[in-house]
Length: 324
Image (cartoon, rainbow, N blue to C red; front, side, top):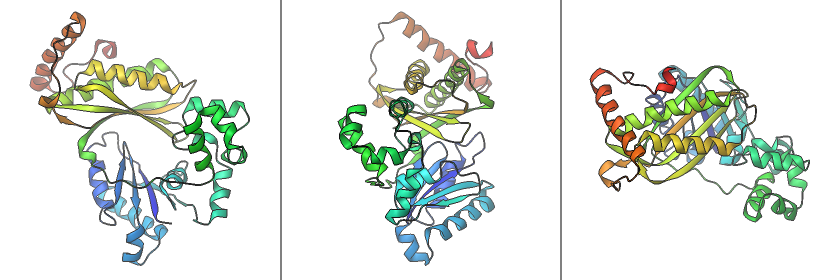
């Protein structure tokens, strides 16, 4: 059991806190992968031998250190691979450490009772398709023939689903740099059912990201959407932009497309977050003349709004639909 998935209970403005918490994890192991907006994977294979403690004992130390140094509690899942560690932490409350033993029988028992939607990578649409055929738990998915799964969700996705339902995890922890990204999140005061309010929150977050990117003279190549639900589960989807951009309108369109692709129906949403990834200097982006008068007008409005924010503060200008 060497992999931890740590989900931090971060305050609303988490952008400055997450890199420091990742640095704290790197005191235990250099193999740390950020899972924005609020989680990370840590491979403790070497740390267990170095410290002479198992993963659960190290997880307890990590939680105490996170609380003592940063005042941030966390839930931690432990398992023999990234997949099981992420699933173990899915429903864990703050302060809990949930471990899945590495023995095949224990892994099969843990997976068998999990809903199919709990499997990372299974979106709402795929889950509905499987549930329509009675495959609502991973135990039932594991019992289904591979050919059946491939007919339902496709050859490649069916093979991957079949393997994961049997506990076969080919994933690994890949160290990455959270500093090459920017994030903006919007928490709702209560679990929000209204899709229009979800979209307004996405508009607000995209506007913030665009303004911050332009202030740093950066562009992003990828936009990632995370939706956190009332049951503490979350869905994350990413999309590579057609070209690197810092324009709020482009980010907003992409955020809306990611949200619509989730196919949420009466979902009780607690938080939405956008992360701009693959940051690069703005001069590396292609500067093509816009032939769309409406788009050109939006870009000129952005320039005026950015000057106002620089002079009067980041809240000096907000979209009219949000002000309403």
